[in-house]
Image (cartoon, rainbow, N blue to C red; front, side, top):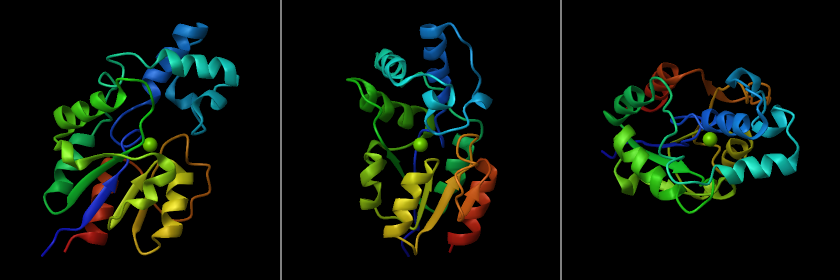
Length: 190
Ligand SMILES: [Mg+2]
């Protein structure tokens, strides 16, 4: 019997992309913010940073080593190893930009999360619905809504973070890795 296929986004699920953003904001503005300050998926908007400054900050992050240095979230490696016991696990990640991102993201997923490179798909958010799975896990509510429109039969799960809790998602949600693992086991393990 084929295993159920679980599609997982990477930033916000495995990788704490907010951390290097806050460091870059500090380097650029001298203001130190914390993850609790990020209450919107648009980090710069949440911090009250104008578009021009935000673009300059994001540009400053397109340097070698940044992507590979992103800290993993607690419980991510243990959680994904649990899922692999009974499911095919595929990462579906939208590249941030710059010359180094995709190669470093591949290496990060292989070295830190135990993925095979073949199982890391670089797909921009607007096209993630073109990838099929039995479950789709995202932290960006807009992407998840679009995916559900195309795949209502799929187990669509919002990975709860401070910045998406007010988005009004009315479907399944997971509050941390242990919760995600038990939710997916309950719904999909055969
Ligand atoms: Mg994400």
